[in-house]
Amino acid sequence: MHKIEKVAGPCADLARAREDAVTARLTSRLPLSGDNLAELGEALAAAPGWLAAPHGDFATGLEALVYESAAAATEAFEADFAMSRGMRSLPDLITALREERWAEICDWEITRFFCCVVPDPSAARHFGDSAAALADAAWAMSSRMQYNSWHFIAGNLPKAPEVVDRDHFVPPTIPDVAFYSDQHHHGHVNNNVRFSIRSPQSVVVDGRRFNGFVDLRLLRCDGAPFGEQDLLAAHRVSAFTARATGLVAELAAAGEQIEVTAFDSPWHWSAVTGGADPATRAS
Image (cartoon, rainbow, N blue to C red; front, side, top):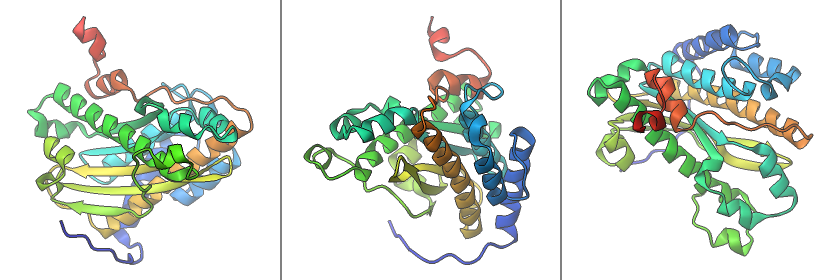
């Protein structure tokens, strides 16, 4: 593998067009207004309460925002998949932080985390034109991203012995673009992912900064690779989702009980295939 780090240039027409397309979808589907993602973030900060209430088909506005942001990115960036991850219960995390239960946080299962994966329906062509295979791939990606969240969280905790002793990755802070990862990345080999973008973001939870707490990932299985302008626009989308997550963390710190219940295996099956969940199929 060959890695290059560089300072990105300014946003140009392509990045602005990507952002404009995401903004248009979000303003049409969420109770937000603005001409760009920064303005949507300001509107969100001015009235964040709806993030904790049911919205549409989702139990919380946060879930709706995560889904719509990922779905908008799939469309706007001409991706085969877009995904966004996070933690299911910010109130549980805040309680554990306040009581300094570092070992308990390290022992949480990956199901404490979520990842919403939104494939483009046309991506089924990479999976034998099967919606079922596409749904299975989406859930496999979601599970892997839950694992990544589990791996990153310990790196944001105080260096207590139980934290130091637990295997973890250094939480990411720099966005990146990958080319031809279907030649070397095991998960990408299995799911035909050739080009990708990763845009991690930090979120402050009850006064503690968690690097790599959320991110946006964009995947293409063929065609043209993502470029720097795509990366710049994607980073703005992930920053918007991170801002929403931070606002929910503030609500949770003030006593609001908010939990993400969507984006499990049955949800992905239903969202991708429109049919019954895997448990129903098995029975």
